[in-house]
Amino acid sequence: MKWQNASANNRSVFRALTISLLLVVLFGAASGHAASPICPSGALSLYMPTPTGSPPDELYDLLLDPWQAHFQETLRLLPTPGRGGSYAAARLLDDERDDCAMAAVILPSIFFLSETTDRMVNVADLDIAAALASAPNAIWVAKESPFQSLADLVIHARAENAKAGGVFILAGTGRYTDQHLASLEFDRAAGVESVYLPVLGAAEAVQAVKSGRATACWGYALAPETMPGMRALGVAADRRSPALPEVPTFLEVRVDMINVAHFALALRIKAPDEFGDMPAQPLRNALTTLMADSELRGRMAAKGFTPLALGPQEIGAFLEERRREAASGLAAYDLIPRQLWR
Image 1 (cartoon, rainbow, N blue to C red):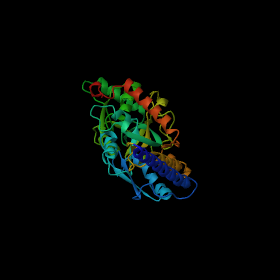
Image 2 (cartoon, rainbow, N blue to C red):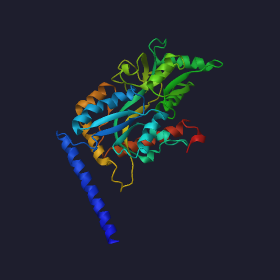
Image 3 (cartoon, rainbow, N blue to C red):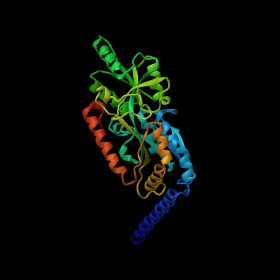
Image 4 (cartoon, rainbow, N blue to C red):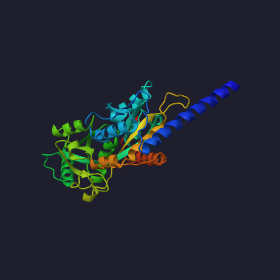
């Protein structure tokens, strides 16, 4: 019994010393000195929930150079799209050999996806270590579309609803996601009925509009080049997007809805005595170091994102608020059919 207690104490001391050393290294980076790599291999994998070239890449691509500069290690973006982001998170959870990995997750989508009977991921198995930035959703149409305003689109939708067999279709990324909820919120706020068409990513949503399969689509309110060949009609936020200053908010045209997505990073949760796992606290501090970089935040803002400079002590309250909002959305709208709730 004594040797077991001694062994447990030794493990605790080892863990404490390891984490303390990492914290010292990371705080050294904050003071202007490059830190040692977090991962022994010198490379950290980031599983991405959307296809290559999707708008969220605009955010995560900005991390590559600062990560290399601060931590002398490569950040690898690995596209793993599908099921509204479930495949990326599931890849993180399933690949137990890779202890130097994270998954990019979108809130509230990951909370919704965790509530279905056929879920691939339980959010309780993820440690959402940092939230990088936010961006509101917007409705986009093809540049050549006859609709010049959100009001034009609403009038068209109501006319289609009044026809026998008329259908008004909005495309968006994934089922049971922030953009799926945006369609339900839009229907109620604008007094229309739409059919939501889930697709793999933004490029597929654009193609659905271009091919006539959808009248319009959801996309984040970012720089216009993130949605090539498209133009935004309205932004679901309480203020105009700096990336789309000429585009009114939904509220300005009396469509009372706000729909904002938050882009975060998640780790795999492991049992405390598994030494192979990358400690969450050092990673949080690494991300805090990055988000203290005013140049990086400026680049995020220039692309239309709202940077979230949350410290390790603030992330818990932020996530709890996002969970409450997700629960409220599920209670208010039929996002997930009742028979598919877990």
